[in-house]
Image (cartoon, rainbow, N blue to C red; front, side, top):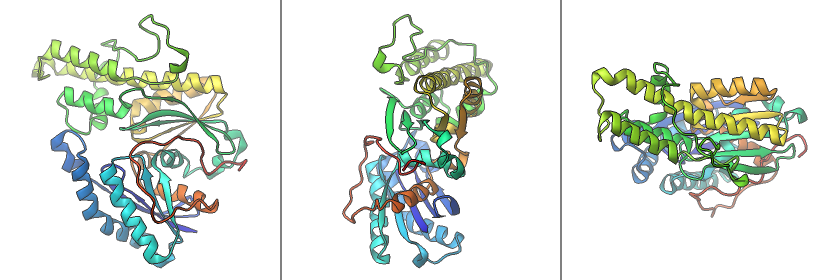
Length: 362
């Protein structure tokens, strides 16, 4: 079975060709970062225009790299939710037209579910092993931060999510406050290695450090607005209202960056391990764009080792938005007959995360 996957949920135009769910024949991505950088974030209308220009060449490139003809595709999978609506619409419309012209099934894929699959695409042996479950996935990206418990029959339960900013959004806003440019995550990760992560004790949201007990229903939820506000206040106090540090203050700025990153990572790791312990998770999956963060990968590995829990981290190429995860997951949906009508709509908001189309008990 060969699936073509299309991904346009944000600012990457991506296409991939995957055989039988796990053999990636081609995975092509066109990034728009340079286009959005002057605006300090993704502009939805600009993203849509860039997708319109890039999508056909990217799909053709993926098919060529896979060394197949377009007629060899058995189905077309596309990200239909969640994401920026103007961006999603480009991919969905293209996929509809392609599926109709080829007379092939169309498969609508959830972007967040795709991220979970992206961590597992190279590990079919774990997906099919009952000992892998229950599986706890930390999906952490620019737009989403959530903890999802997955049973061996694919049944899912969201046990925690952000109440305000996503972790990746917090990094982007921190970079803007510190005049580091966009996107913030990679530059913060890089610069933090030169700073002292213990220099500043930034707050950690919803962990009870301030002396106020965390409500039971919030014990696995996330909040990054407090640490962002604390950073803003600290930067204005130390470097002025525009955050313009002098050359002599650069070492202090590096300490601020490292300390901010440490606070965000500490919350992600702490809540993930606590949830894994409470729910008896055999495996933790770390996925999404922020899973590229080197400190998060390192700290999560150490914490899961201490807890005796297996950790699977998505490779960086599958942390970022990509179409291989969409095509791969689409294969599993196709096997179950989960195809979509040609009049499907794109949905910008995340839908309930109830089920994944894989697991040894399915």
